[in-house]
Image (cartoon, rainbow, N blue to C red):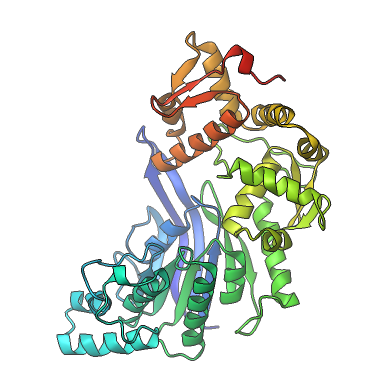
Length: 433
């Protein structure tokens, strides 16, 4: 077995809620990264994947457990670990050459050596001729190449990639991913191991030797899959498609209706951030040829050209509202879902409202609170304060925004964007039971 580079044992990380109480983001995480392997980490937004990467990079300290780099405790940024961010994170006033050199400059590397090493990696990553360009003069794909070159120029043992391709269009992301894999396979880079955080299931299968799926609330590894296929891999091969199906099955077997099981949600549940128009369009597409009410999720993604980041939340939301069943990576329209597709707008709205109040405790709590208040309206801050007891500020706002949009669609309540007030609808607007 190859030598271990990074090891996490029982790692715990908490952040403070608004009332000062700790909110556990990572709980008892065990993870090992070994030489000559690429590991991909998949999971929902807010599951703690990026926090885990920052702990491994030494940018954030764990509250508990052990974080070891080459067998030694990690107490701060490690010289052998580099990180590539989704947002490119370039200095806009520096040229490509200067951006790539900046890490070497921080380490006290002499100017002549900095220039030589930067030119080598700039050429290797496909940016020759752009050394003097500013970031604003580059495409998104080229800017991310600069970010990767800056990470590689310091000859890291470990390369951490946090959604490094997600801000790029599909073709550019695939081309850049393939270039990184070619450098890795041909050992043109000194990097001994790569950890990739991704939302793209196929990307994870195409790149990784192991795929880990992270659970949420709190974040922890709940599934591991080995990918024993030689690279480069064919995305259309039966072997790759089978593994993609397996990951879809695992990722949709969460806290929603799967098979005949219905698990109750909590008031502060992380609601899937799904657009209602997309949800309705997906239901309607499922009822058409060739699906006729039942679809394999990867095939559905291809047919609709939806990314995993769009498809999975929409599928989870539809399952939450009991319009579909999710099982084994497949999605089947329920009788309720078929009724919804066949209905006129008003009937759809009433059905949506009924399922929302039945299945989403936060929406039911908002309606009940408004009914109890003499004015029939309350500030959104009233509900944000409740959510912040267990969620951080950003996540609390996201969850409430989803509940507000879904409630507005079902005319369960209204929202005034100017005043931040959530209000009961007028009597003649109330959706019937």
